Image (tube, rainbow, N blue to C red; front, side):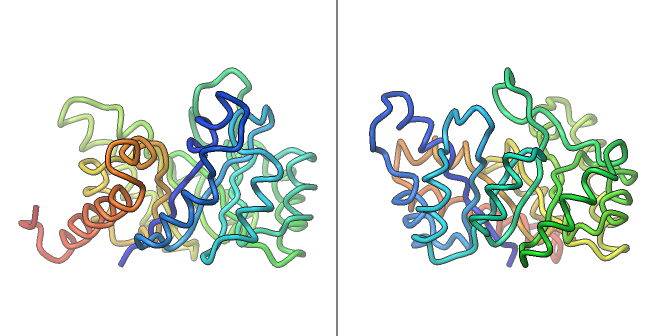
Length: 249
């Protein structure tokens, strides 16, 4: 079964709207775990728009599954990650004015700097992952800098409207996943996924793990976190079963 890591950033977004103590990202994470999530993801942004430094420590100490810490490749974030020591660090590009992460890291253009970060992360026994667009060149660069895994950005796929465009982007994702596996990288995916579009992504056999947050938190408002996570796991399983029987819906 493909793993689901639930991102609880936007529980903190609601909290930060009033700068109070509720809702609690840790409580949401624990509910997600209870519903079957195999890990928790949080993104500590430089502008601290949702997750705060204390959240990282509280969630790391309070959850029962691995913590995946997303962060920009900056000295400030690296220092904090080395201190807190999550299960995994996932490097993502970051722009101060963006609403959400707009694309993958340009690993090819920043190999030297990323190697330096990788070495420090691995010295602390932390897994090292890179969020990249579906591009085999970025995958090969990720291997050169000795990443443990890549997370394929599914954002463009989730925004496309016509069947032809969607199929073409899915093919790019499949080829990227296949190439990553061929050269020894673990393959994850995420960004913009919901109950429907996750199925074709989950059907790609090389993908071992999905990071999903915004949609799950949105659905939790209507029916609760546990129901939202349970339904997402069901959708992922439906998609995963397609690699055995393409006729399964």
